[in-house]
Length: 462
Image 1 (cartoon, helix red, strand yellow):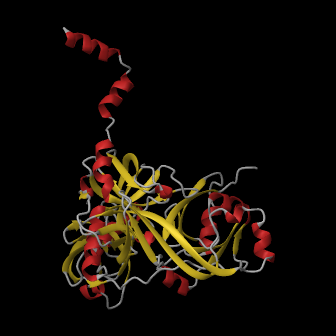
Image 2 (tube, rainbow, N blue to C red):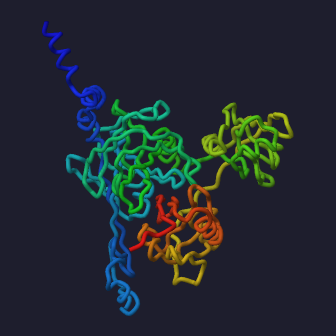
Image 3 (tube, rainbow, N blue to C red):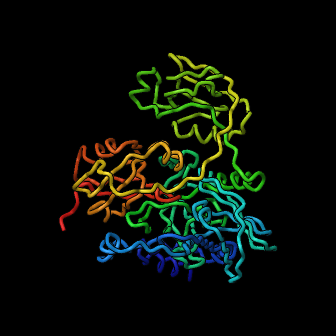
């Protein structure tokens, strides 16, 4: 009889409330179990010169006066930064983002039990933004490693980190997408989530509901640098492979074949006689490189690499990079209406050069977009080499709408709505053509990291 009454009561509950009681997970046990393995990482660096400005200083009404008329203040200063990380071995190896630790002279790691350790940088990999730090300790709590390939879009995930320095902060959300490709980030198939990620979360773990780490929180799409609902994580299998190489050799070895590729559009597929858009179109071949020696030619469409199908061009760099140099691989291409197989010996990518921030000098009278308050300059070949980028446009000055959107002098704009830009003229054309009453997403390289900044092309009236 009581079962009948209970069923009647449940039927009277509002449907949304009943659904929530069945579906919403409890993250408390996960946070309690995994929280001790998440650490706060702070770095400091000192120098002599003009002290870096604190965030927001340029908005001070007296800033411009003192910048123009005040004497330069040369003094000793100390710069600090905060981030997160997580322990992957009981003897003190920690994973984090490269941009969290690579610029610091001193690394301090703080555990949840308030113990502090001096961190030793084992190695960094700028291409994946992964770093390994070591502390001298034993019997430490460690995370469990999961399989990001088993993640499903819509699945719940949890982040633990130190946003704005608040240790062991827990946030939750869902997987929004998998295998995201971002301009200039060809080696990482990002996990996109709507988990709240803010400055200080970088380098922290992303967990599935089993309490397994499936990613490293890395970057966000934001107007101001704060969370706006779109964040990206590095899959943990990519990070663990990088970490193992850094621990073993101090560097990351990647394969290369010496081709420049592009996406196969429907029109291109039709012109090459392909039944559907697939593969990676070879737009140029490095003379004397592995692909050239194997017989691959310009205008070939690479369909398979080591028996793995290439559905989109962005899949090829990851597969090649993940292949051990010296490996003999099979490449299948589409050439003049038929498939051909080639044997190729994978070469090795050269070591990354340490990227530096582009130094914006006094505006040189470069390309100016008046309504947006944006003055653009062209990067020199030396700056491109230092930043390890092949494209990008330097922001020489940002005022008005551009400044309000979050752009700063010294930023490098890499792409507009995922379309790469190489010259100020290209960028200006993209920002001034078409519907003016729209918002575009600018991919901006700032220091050692990247962030998407939305820019409204028709500024709202004051």
